[in-house]
Length: 354
View (cartoon, one colour):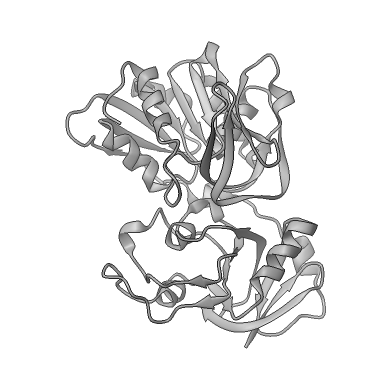
């Protein structure tokens, strides 16, 4: 028996899963009906306790080929955890992964009520614990800090293109999902991955054909060094930013970001393309958004969230740069917007296969 204690005083009793440790984190929810492995291994969840709104989790077990990175979340909450997965690719039950990675969690709790509270009151801190503490000050004082520094690469690495090399891309790793790397390599790009705070001069010395700004966790404004280096990079080479990369580019160009009430997390977020009027269903995982008005005269709004009207993409024609808040590489989620990688290739000199 264990508890999920919210900073508003709400308490949920459930059964322990994963590691038997107490932990505080920022409580969020994801609406994905599948893709729990990608969620558990997405570095963008650093510092967060993730609640799955879909009731049954773990039915296809543990499949390492589907991992998106090193697990960084602080806790995991599900309604029902499947202990007998049925999939030919599965190597073990999901709970084995949670224990090995030191991730505490709960099952048997009312996840619908947790999601309802989060939607109505907003993202809040929470604790997974064996006993409900009398003093909740530890919840009030918790902040997600040093998020990008905790998940970025520690060294520069180069990965070859699949087939003949057509372009060379510099990927700034703020917590990059592996499918960004796969998507580029599949299209004939060799990719050199750089740690988040790599000096612009080091990246430009490679003379890449294009620069990729990855996804990542935490408050974008915390990354002052990365923002300063981006100011030196943007406009020098074609650039494409995803998620945190989208936010950091906006900040580097004088824009602003704001924390959303409960963020966008899941594989069913509708995004409207302002150029065509078409709406795409996208995969998303973020708690902050770019303030559109802050970039007036600097760039053009390219995409808007069809639910709440928040900024989902920018174009900076004078800098040969475009960025999106959603995930065109999906993993997990719909592949509606994978064409944006081809658009990036066009910026670098020519379109290859889709």
